[in-house]
Image (cartoon, rainbow, N blue to C red; front, top):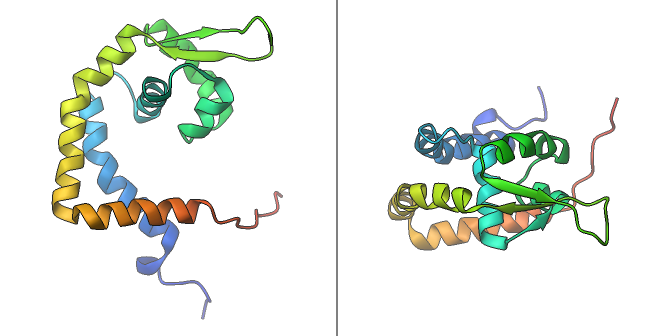
Length: 149
């Protein structure tokens, strides 16, 4: 018999199931915009925090830097972000949201807020705040990394 927990009580699987429950209506909301959930996260981060260096955007949007780098061109082509290089450090790239990017977020803000309100209403405001605090605590755990093969 395996030492593994049953999948119905497996933390990674439970997190994925919960993520899918939350993301399904968000994906549906975004389906009309031509923006996927990764681009949405980038735009949300930039709208909230202002212009940022590429590696910081990747970290805060939970993306690999290589994935974000591949997304920058299309985001620029769509007129949603600008990319610049600071004069004092030509190795860095800074992303900033454009007015069109802000408009896209605003166009979906009521639906997004409604999704969150439904989660809060059904799950409970206090329970949701507790869950968010617990997930942040879980994120801070320093787990060992597996050996790459």
